[in-house]
Image (cartoon, rainbow, N blue to C red; front, side, top):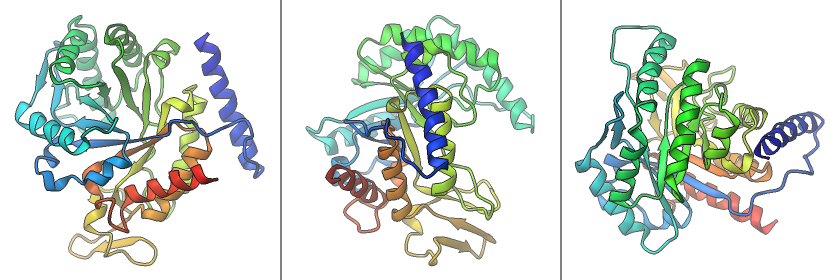
Length: 341
């Protein structure tokens, strides 16, 4: 039965693309009723209560705690308690009685050899991940951590299982883990260009965080409205039901030469020129930022095109939502305007 739902997602995506080309909105796509605002929170960035704004969690619906849990190729899990515990306590304090889910992201074995080719690095990394997925113990080890700390579920940010064999093993693992999680959530981050999920895995996963960023237009602007919305259509083409997909929003900028620099919005929002560029004269690089108008436009697009929500990477890059230039506040404006209309 789920195969037909996946087939419908692909057909709807094709129809939407064709109609958009003709300048027509797809009448068969409706906004979801429970639109989510999911935010990754890097654990060691919220050890100080002053780094959290209570009003932000009137906007955020789901938190993914990141950077404090890993697993190795044997399926053993390591939790950095000195990083996780104060972050989790502060989040729970600021969230209070709000109905916000908190899930835990697990990172797998990272490449640490001498290879310089990125694809070769990912191939080696995939071997270690596959060993962990086939260990027979990883599922129970993860669930034990979720239970110990009361997390609502688990996320994976596996960049990237590229080859089909690696995806095959990842798919099997996702289905196996889902069968043991009960009511806990299972989510994964995916790139628009590399989604080789089986139908069983698509059904097993509750939410997909779509990373439509770190992409550039012809003049080097990072994650524009045009490039990210165009790429987001691939999720449906791969058969992901859009109500399970969260449209990724970068709260950071990359340089126009695609260099390995990530500048946080909150540090530069008041230094941008009229076209949202910032030039670091000392570094000799120019950065283009997603400003509140772009974030609001992207969020409105996600709502109007049937996505289940938006995803933020990452929370600590933004100003408090009480600030007039906050990106979270821009998301809130889009959701409020759509509800009114």
